[in-house]
Image (cartoon, helix red, strand yellow):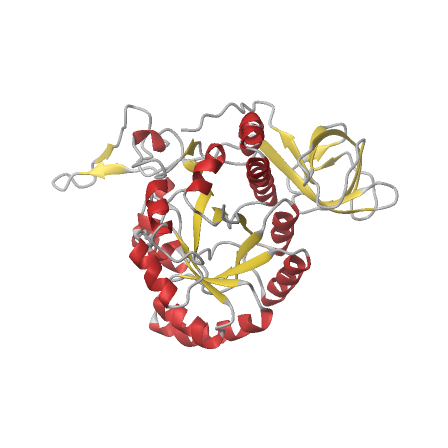
Length: 417
């Protein structure tokens, strides 16, 4: 059996630390340039240095994305960027463009190069090509089935690694190569500025009747004709391993710390349980399903892994996420009086029953006993996002715990297809 890596996204130093503490083997991040998540907060040079140090001290790895499809005017700046990355010593660079790859190979050949899913990697000859160019790993296109990935594994060198998505949003275009955003808004998805027009509502206009908008109905359920469900393979860890995949990748470099902690912790336990005992993994499937539903999602699908998706992989009635738990804050530290220091994310009040989410898998119910603001003044509630607070709870709380609360009308029954 090959070693299995759990690869988690992070859009900030805080989220990187959460990913590391909640079970990531490796974290992938973007800098302030040349990354395909331009709307994510991304990492400054200083935060990237600190994040890499933090991960390395804990035996974890950090990969930096530089996966835009470059234009001529990008190239010299990219060369300087790779020179800066050389000093920071990330564990790998994730690249899709051959020109960017060439620069990385020239400027920092000692850093591993991984080929992004944006390069449309759909066959073993493509993998063999990149291996000959010195790439250590190739990220499979989302359009591949597990059968196809297994065939790739059987036809590439043993020391070449396969990385595949295991959870997260699905794009309606071929491995992310979407032109809708650029066409509608001038913001290029292939340069990190996608506006996600696949989630918009559409109508049809007939050429001879301009201005007459005909709604698009699919069985009267709605008009979100491009709106894919989210990938979730929590029930299929054995099949992912048997396909010969080395790295299980979570999508979501624009997600919150709560999302990252939830998916990292759940997949970490699922992978470890299976490696310990397939029977233990099967016995805990209900726990995995319940926990994974506590982060935002847009219903679930298995994508292309078991064949071509059909109409059931789309969400027709809404373009919004299901959000069953509300993120209250991350515990930065605690003082000797037991007060937890947090930066508040959503409103809560004295007397509220909340949940403490711990990296080790426990969820502990607690009551909010006291709330103090940054001036050490007791307040009855915390209504202002990003407010620095000190909170007393009637349960044990530690640094890197996450505070969350279930929505009153939450329905956590989910179905995986």
